[in-house]
View 1 (cartoon, each protein chain N blue to C red):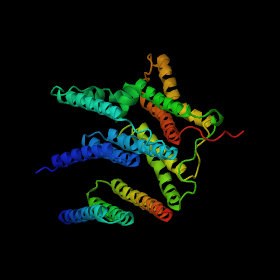
View 2 (view 1 turned 90 degrees about the vertical axis):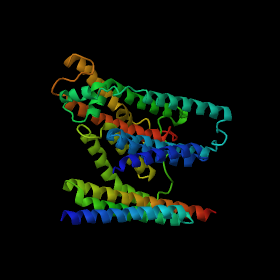
View 3 (view 1 turned 45 degrees about the horizontal axis):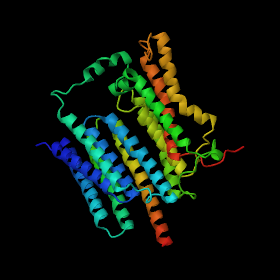
View 4 (view 1 turned 90 degrees about the horizontal axis):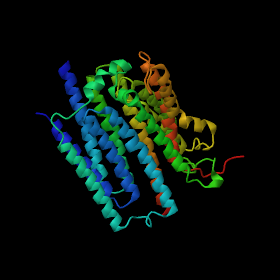
Length: 97
Length: 314
């Protein structure tokens, strides 16, 4: 059982790290701000979500698990809102030019 | 095989690289972004040095509040059009660089010449912990062992607000600072406020409350509450208050005033200035801290809001 859980953690955290890596590559390689924003936010949501998922079997108490999930949810909310704000600012700048 | 030293080395290189990038950035806004990233990396360094209290403070104050302060100052300077004209000359830059190198070299020399093992007061700090009823030695140092210093730090914050307000012109005195953020608030920002602020207030109070026994404390909790008020003001859900408002003045002085009053009471009750009566130390410390949280939560946003720019209502 514990081997299966370890394996699950390993796979989930590894996948999360891969999404962070892909997001970083996208941030560096994509041609304009909107696509870079796209790469960044997707990597944040999925990458962090998978890392949290992988850490869940390893926490010591239910409260710690809830804390991890709350951190993920907060980052979702702030990441999505910031992406909206940056996107809006970009489109306004584009309209002004 | 241990990977941690490798990660630490990578972290140190990253901190140095971001610091260099911040100095080299040509644009004020870019430099501020670099500075905020630098602060967040530094807070990870503090975690690695087993100093979570410092890490929390660095993230909240060094990176968060200072970042907002610098971004708003940058925007104001840009609007005033004075950034380029105010750029320092070559001699000034050389002097600043020489001073910075001198300070860095002196610090490095001190760290390298520390005796082995380095002198520490940690065992003494832990020994006295039982008398305070606290579980977090950092809070004990701040509010019990060197409480006078902590009280004076709050006075410094108050002086900073007085300094900011003192550049107001006479006709605006007593009025409100200019509103933060855009005139037409955006839906995303208002949504963020509605989702984040209730939680943020809870987290701020929680961090203050657990600060007695675990990492956290008045400064970190107060900074989070301050951040919540700031994002509410940035979304224009509420404007900055009039600087002449009675409640604002009371909130600004509440922390140092209560601290000083308790310190003076200690003179009569416990026989010494800033002494706490035995057995009551912890409730008294939490009492002082509650007012300090209030003062910090009000002071930091007022620093960001700047001097009054609206005439006071009759």
